Length: 180
Image 1 (cartoon, one colour):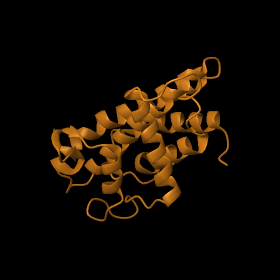
Image 2: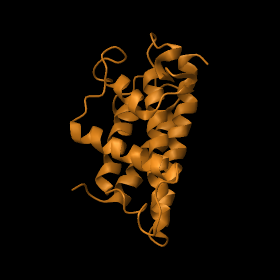
Image 3: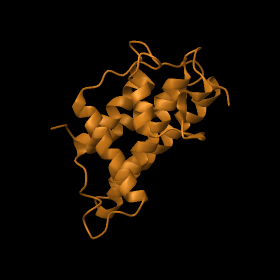
């Protein structure tokens, strides 16, 4: 698939990830173990948002979003994040300039996602209490930047999808409460 052809499907995945995160966060009020699915959903959304950002430039290549060790797969979030922060892939204002705390928060959310998917977490209360809401806010901050504030892709033709993404980010921020 050509780089620009990846943008629409990537944005659809961002939206679905955000919707899942919001649904599971709301459901965790009555059923706390459901909270473990929030990092799974947010990492999926973040990976897709970074794919959209790295696919937007005219100079984007097929390999910009692939995993070097498995070229038929999308790169993991850590690698996509490094690329989105690199002058080799994006230029300001699209290039991500993130404080260390935001990067650590994203790494924490990704680690929680991996723990959930690989069955590392056991026992009541472990998975749902792994993360504080500030780590989720950091993921939303990056999604806001790459999809809405400074998208590296042409927004024409994606207006409805971007409006829905904006609504989901806003709803999740409200549900998570203020950052500490």
